[in-house]
Amino acid sequence: QLQLQESGPGLVKPSETLSLTCSVSGGSISSSGHYWDWIRQPPGKGLEWIGTIFYRGNTYYNPSLNSRVTISVDTSKNHFSLKLSSVTAADTAVYYCARRVSLTWYYDLWGRGTLVTVSS
Amino acid sequence: QTVVTQEPSFSVSPGGTVTLTCGLSSGSVSTAYYPSWYRQTPGQAPRTLIYRTDTRSSGVPDRFSGSILGNTAALTITGAQADDDSDYYCVLYMGSGISVFGAGTKLTVL
Image 1 (cartoon, rainbow over the protein chains, first blue to last red):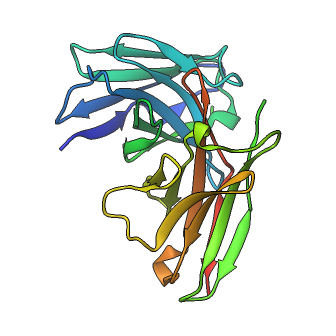
Image 2 (spheres, rainbow over the protein chains, first blue to last red):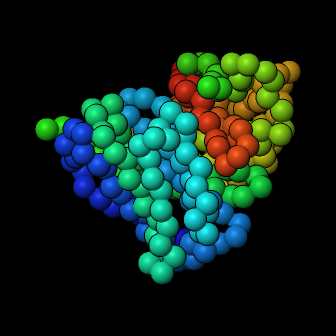
């Protein structure tokens, strides 16, 4: 059964770059039928789509975060990654990785999420 | 930027029926937006309920149904149960790989 697992530092200093990785196990990230997304949820607030990547490297980002976000994929390691630069306290959130099904555009699989706190 | 609208909160009595909606700040929701619905309880990742407007995800009971209602997507819960007390999010696909989440509806069953 395919699973997703987020990993990375739980604490990042303001103005630095947040870096997270989502490891895919039990299946291949090189699927033509899926996109791989990052979604976040600030404490007590709603979900926000950050961006997505296809295994060939095509990316799409939330316009409100576009200038600070980079999503990449490493098919040899079967994982994809998120970098968010110039973070502030407003970037404190639970970060989820998720699999989105192509053509029907819904999430069929979610990671458990990881809390990242931005603080000095 | 397009905003996806949801009722901030709703309440339903046990055994009752409730319909949550998902709209657009400008324009109407149609099947072309591939509306999907998710339920989330505190501390947990979201769980998929409905996709492609009205298709139930595997294992979701048939008391959950999706539809287009006027100019919005809708999630109807019939025979509400105590454990339906959760946050509900809709997602709309905007094209070009971009999806937008609604702000969520907090459903209280009491």
